[in-house]
Image (cartoon, rainbow, N blue to C red; front, side, top):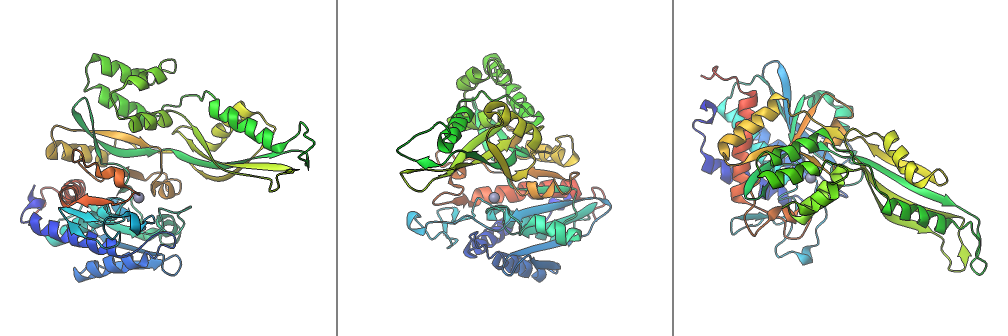
Length: 456
Ligand SMILES: [Zn+2]
């Protein structure tokens, strides 16, 4: 590809490693965030290359940075990453989580995988586009934003859409959430996150008669709540297999022998699903994840009732983390919950964010598949649904036409399993993986956004 000409990839690798180490050294633990450290750092890098960067704060220290390379009229692409990280417990780490050490081929630190690695790789891609003078058929936007990891995430991309929509008005978005590889019977796959479950966080509140603990009665709120939670815990939940999940399972099945292919297809058959799941030649955590993806799920996580051992409380509350499959809505999920527990207990919704599914029938998705087929011809890219959410949940409900893909290419090193270190101790990424991802993303962006044939 002509846009690849004259790129010194060894130099680009040294640069992207340097960016990641510097970003890790900005302590952006959220809360409180303090993402302005990363925003200012990135703005300085961009300005040194002659690129205008806009730094905005939703509140003091909650910094976002965006920049744009102008192109033709095709709908814009945004390279999006969040700069905040979850907390680290330094005494449980073998190196300083905010040191950005380069040690034995790895860059160490909180955010090395989630997701300062991609923030750095996308920055490198953006700089290379500028340096190479790649003629663009569309605008390419770079955005490194605050506040993905904590609570509702109101200080990052959602805030930018509400307050500076002109900075982030893309139709296509590349961000975190997919790109990792996995094996089934020796065949290698990469995920591209095209879907995520929705969030439905609610409280169940049981009310009853107060009283003295020495005189039990049959209108005890704690017992009513416990009964409802017991029902939810043992309920047989309906299957809601989404288009994305079907495509994922079918994509694996297409590469497998008859027996495994059959088991993969039976996962979608309500009568045989559980039996098929247990036979699949997949890691236990992947099977658990598939089981969650097939259904709407509820996890009671916090309980509150009473404060004295001898007083029957008048109220008992459970906080429940509910997740709903694509195709479902808050109303359909609530009705499903009610079908199990009846109408007697109050249900109060605290947070709802709908499930999302991007199309695999888009030119960007096709480009990802094509580029990976060249970079790693033995592997297959599959659309993937995730149980958790990314910043897509702030974008698609506001701008439903936007297609968000989670794709940070990453190859497992046998025995190392870096990806298990996300949010854990000793989070680190290999220089090799960071360099691989930077090259893949550069190819994807130049192929999707470059005016082929117009190169000088
Ligand atoms: Zn993340």
